[in-house]
Length: 171
Image (cartoon, rainbow, N blue to C red; front, side, top):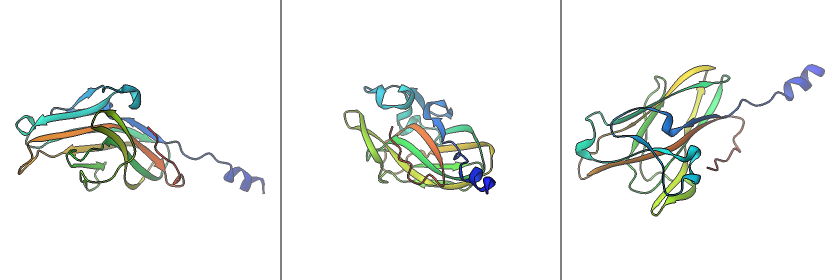
């Protein structure tokens, strides 16, 4: 009976927090502050606002090394620039398939970090991860067609354990 009590009292795995500006990057991505740095985790985000000609053929790339503290199903959240002009982006963890996030995907908990520049949380997906090291990769493809610029910004990523489905991202 005491063992059951100990198992029930085990703390949940912690949230994995990744700062957007901490990435290894390729292309015109850079850490930058905004007019309201207090609205960003760490005061900066990773951002690009560049003409198509300045974007490499493979697009922009960012990679984040992190460790999952325990094997679990994690909800993957991204706090991104959430206006309608955001470029589509793709993401994956380790060697999984790329998932595309369109610019019209709704974000929650929006805050204006500058006029016409909201930032908000997107739930990307839920992934099963073993404990240990992992890589979260993000790619912003080079614009095609009528698009003249690439626009992308990420403040942070949060990976929350599956049983904490009531967790709410709040800046």
